[in-house]
Length: 329
Image 1 (cartoon, rainbow, N blue to C red):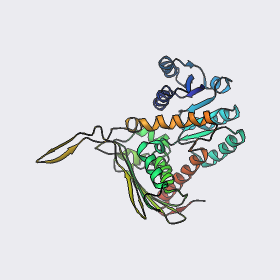
Image 2: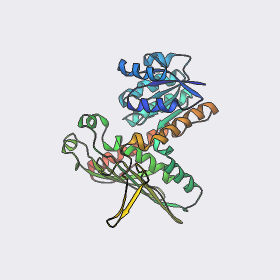
Image 3: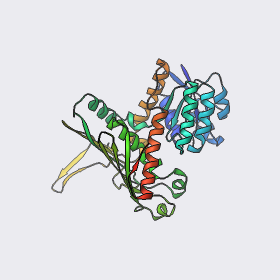
Image 4: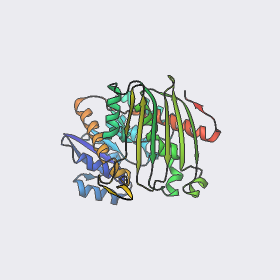
């Protein structure tokens, strides 16, 4: 039985707590949060001790930490946890700075601790099945990937100001998915965007509607479309075109009931938000992490995948600013 310390008891921390409670080979031993009432509430739900983050990291009884705290706290928590010999599960992004992620890679790899970056969409049943069938050769050689990701409504401007921007906060999931489905590294990025949903987002220096085109060295292409508005639910789709055919994953509706009449066919909207849409992915992601620790294997995506997605996000932001494609190192 693995003892897990949960750092961060907010929305995503509660999601991970729910996943851990469904895994027989792990238990939540302790929780911590900057807000004591949040830690106390989750402690009451899980039976875990509510302590400080430093107590969790220094405890010899804790095998691994799950970091679901704000991004600006990740560096110190990863640094301390790695040096304490803890296995680490960290929500994306690892850090807003690629240079700081490189520094963390050195620390984590020197410590030899397992590390998983929380790109949960890789574990979505639909996307995971796409990847497996592509790897099996069902559509031949990958040529063109299309990813659509649209939120039902924009976040508060206060969040936007500290988020790092749409490319580093929202589209970063799609950048990781692009690498996952393309099977090759990205070498060039072109991005453009506008503030069409909420003028206040534009005033804050960000965009809420954006497109990015990614290319690999072999010429494979990925096109990504993001919007902070979708009136029909949480829009999450992907399509991969190959030399032998096409494979795609569609939205997950609220239910599978369809009504037909003289006015046409009518079905349910897409599930409303990421908590519902990716509930299965979050559980599969955590189970993968725990299974890897139990078996002594390396979890994936790792910290270097976190860096790769961040570099693409940085290139997209630079492309938006300059209006020209940006080559990655």
